[in-house]
Structures are given as C-alpha cells and as structure tokens.
Image (cartoon, rainbow, N blue to C red):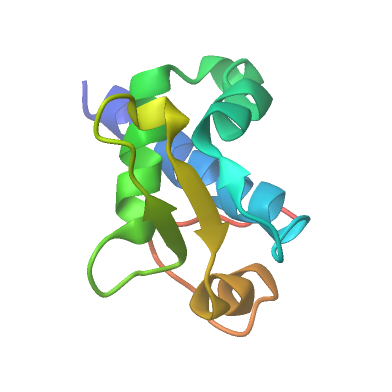
Amino acid sequence: MVRLDKLKVARAKELRGEIICRLYAYYDKVTPVSSINALLRYRNYNSKEDIKKALHYLSGAKKEFIHVTINEDDYFASFVQLTPTGINLAEGDISDIGVIMNG
C-alpha cells in the first residue's frame, strides 16, 4: 500500500513539472486552464481533478510559481500564467521538492 502512495505522489510531482514546462513555452501569455487540461489530460491519464490539484499547489502560498485568475462559475474557464518565480523554477535556478522537472 505504501508503494502505491509513493507512486501517486511521484506522478503528482511529475504533473506539476509538466505544467511548468508547458507554461514556460508560452511564459509571456495568459493560458486558459482548459488548454492545460487538454494538453495534459491523457499524459499518464491525469484526471481533471489531478490537474486542478496541481494548479492549486503551484499557485499556493509560498509557492506562487503560477498565477491563476479564477472563474468562479467554471474553474476550467480560468486563466493561468507563469510568474517570475515559475520561470526560475523552469530554468533550474530554483527547485521545489514537490515538483519534478523532466527536461
């Protein structure tokens, strides 16, 4: 059971890194959350809920790697943008134990 939990945690960390990488490709643009969902939904079979949790982590207090402009009626109609701290994470200038950067 513990092994399964470790695998789930590792996948969550990889998903967060993948989101940072995708946003870094367009770091000067505001991206709809629905686009992030479309790009990542089938990668490792990430659910909408997994993607939402990853975005919450990346935008959380003391992280602030991304900025999310939330649409209260539909979360996936919200917009997300990489912050300067997120750019530093993507470029390897800083690291976060909860984010695995592949690439």
